Structures are given as structure tokens and as C-alpha cells.
Image (cartoon, rainbow, N blue to C red; front, side, top):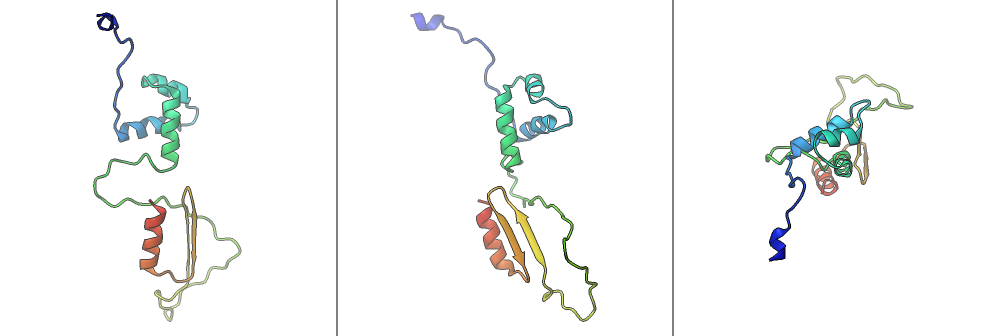
Length: 129
């Protein structure tokens, strides 16, 4: 039979854990790193590493689920055009107005004033899908 004479040439597919993929992607993000060189060091095609980098930037190359709580990345920015008001003993923290800004890959959430915790949870659950 002719089909039995055909041999597969080349390496077989390797499965890498999410942690290993993240490690490889983080190596490519070091100053002066080359995606092509890092891919070659790990026996990968550069396009595969670029795909993983894209997932990483979208937050979709996370750790394997352990059933624990996952945290959102936070960026602290300087306040612009506002003045700092020292808290006084008379103010109730539950009624103090504030601001929450959250940037997602597909949306930006801005909450000004007092936020309802249950409504905020619903919005965050929807945006994290």
C-alpha cells in the first residue's frame, strides 16, 4: 500500500500551558527583544507568538482557572483640573461623591458620584464576558 510509505517529516505539535505561553510572550516584551528570535528559541513560528501577544494584550491569555477571584488591571492617573479636598470628620464616607474610570478593550466605564454596588457588579459582569 503506497500510503504506508509516507512518513511525516518535522516536529510533532507541542502543547504549551497557559503559563508557558505567558512566559514566552513576556520575553518578547523585554527591551530589545525580537519576537522572531524568541519564537525560534522555543521552536515556534513567529506568527504563533504574535497571536499569543495579541491574546495577552486583550487579557485573554490568563492563568488557568483555579476558581479564585481574578482582579482587573488598574491604572492610576493624575487628577486634572480638580482640587484636593481634605476629608473632615463631619463627612460620611458612604455619601461622599467619587469617580471610577475603568478601561476595557471594548468599552470605557465612567462612574461619577455615588455608585450602587449591585448595579456596578451587573455592569462589570456584562463587560467581562
